[in-house]
Image (spheres, rainbow, N blue to C red):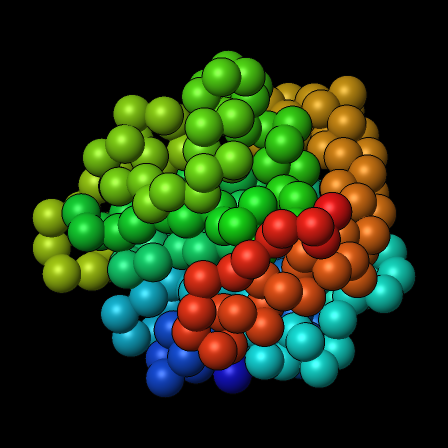
Length: 254
């Protein structure tokens, strides 16, 4: 469900489950973690590029699969993926078409460059699912937009347009063409012509050891809170109501 191809120093990674808008299963989390880890260590890879097949980047968690195999510990596949993303040495570029929801949106904060098609939408629905944010987004988003704006984005979980995402600062460029992929590939090719050592060192300097450590620590803190909420009544009601296509009722569940 994830394709990869190494072409001229670019490791092209495609989330390939278009019939489910590339929603993640536990197997996909493990697969993407392995691909990114191997790519970061492969001397033939200079840059990694991730995109989604079809008309979506990723709809986040596959709720049905998620309910069958919920996260029960801090070594779970989604948390491992987030830690690998936060620790990558080589540049990671994202090409976003359609929706990027949940972890499909938070993983973008661990990419070095994000290019979005003009109709892309970004959604952080954690609170509406009775959960809490993940992927250190509760640390990274306020650093970018301030506490009040981050609160509005995370508490309400309303869709963010590509234009607003660029204004906020987590999208680099908006692509007018039907897909952002060709533009992202062109930028990736430009990176491969540069000194890989200089690129890697610059990425390290931009993130800094203090921020990297803070992000990994926040992933752990959020992970514990996420697991606690996931096994509570509110999340169970939210996830069940999602599958039953009805509005959740959180009254008395907290």
